[in-house]
Length: 238
Image (cartoon, rainbow, N blue to C red; front, side, top):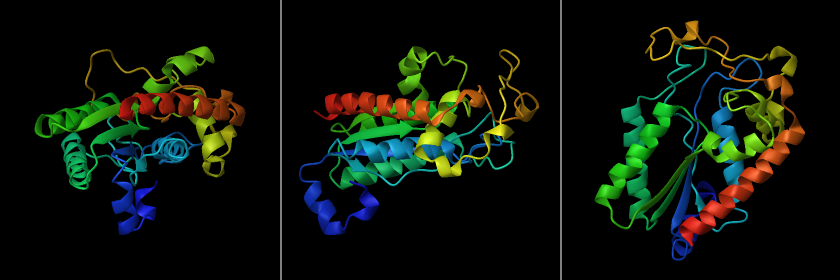
């Protein structure tokens, strides 16, 4: 059930038996010349909307913004500070908790390491205060890791490349631009450096090979991801 589409009375009745909510999080971030800025949100949100058809669970309105470090200076990237993201999540967790929900499934279509650290930190902080709360926090790359390996998609393909472009071709095909604009790229940041001018090392917004993407691969990835999430959620919420 998508919360924003329910009436207040419908939500009140449903929460008597449903105590779990999916909170999808993305980012507004450069994804090369062929994918829209909202790619990270579109993938995880479309998957979540399909997931609630099989699992009786609330689906929160999505959070479009995340923490973007490596692409922050590229055109169109809009980022939150980590502290802002954490505060936003804590406020949402508390409001959902007040409304009677206890199980929180935070699914991120953005897989930045610092971004995901703040998601986990927010969950850990909330757990310290509310004993009945339970959390499942996962990002799309970790969820897909085994599936990508089976399909022979290299581990370094991580952003606007083969798998992400394939998902978009299947889930939001109308938003994918001409793939002839895309190209293969594997940026190299200096090891251990914390660099200021990140666009100097990653100007493309691509990390992988979108030229290998296809709608058929996107369909397979989507089906396998849904199957995996359904198993995880049924185990989590019982």
